[in-house]
Length: 128
Image (cartoon, rainbow, N blue to C red; front, side, top):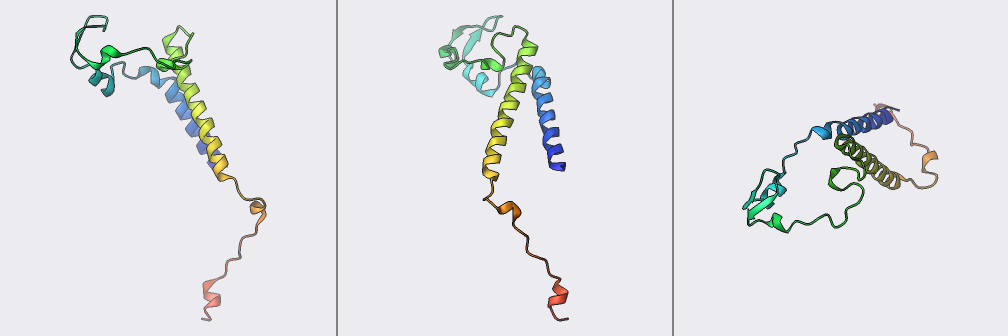
């Protein structure tokens, strides 16, 4: 039972971090975004106005989907959209990982009822 408490506790912490704390993450570009923007000039709205950088060839997500851009499509509240997408991501990851561990953990038929070999006292068998 201690194992399940650890798993549930970890899941709750991950859900809290994904649902609430993720909204307070930095909105500044990460290293990849920053390096792709080197060499370009930007206006006050952060739109490219000149220069030459790889970010000029940026396109919309090819796949898109309901969780593109760290939010849920159709929800206008950014805080709620980001939090729910984080929670959904944690639950999907937990489900896939849990399923994979369950498949790997499967035992051979009858292995659960096998008896353990009895332990012997080394002092009793050494003749001493």
